[in-house]
Length: 141
Image 1 (tube, rainbow, N blue to C red):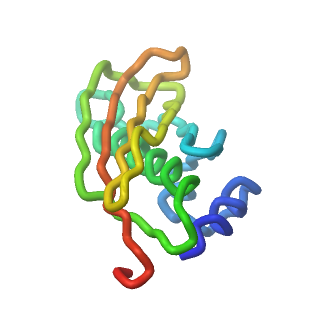
Image 2 (image 1 turned 120 degrees about the horizontal axis):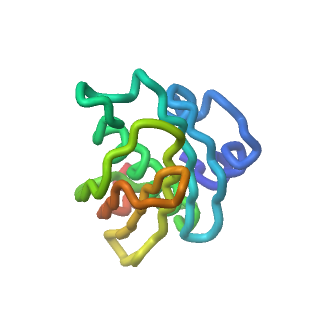
């Protein structure tokens, strides 16, 4: 996959490139070298039985934000895939929006590590996610 072309189209607001982002109305609010900021509305259908945002959806948002932050530092021969994901839920949230701010912590030869903090619209942390991705070289894809 040509990640640079994909990111250019995402930055331009093109739809149909990432079904997850489209389905959950995720806005790519920022992309720069090693960084990504995503915004996602909290809708009633995203809440779990106790009336709070379903945790897996917050983790999925963070995973996407981390992956996009990582895409900004890949060479044309590299791809990536998630191999480990850890989440900490910090507070419940039931309305407004989620803001996922992700960054690349370290890029090595075979692994890349990223972190993401998800906050509510008022800036209160609600979830923290760290992830390790495997770097795939052209011959591994």
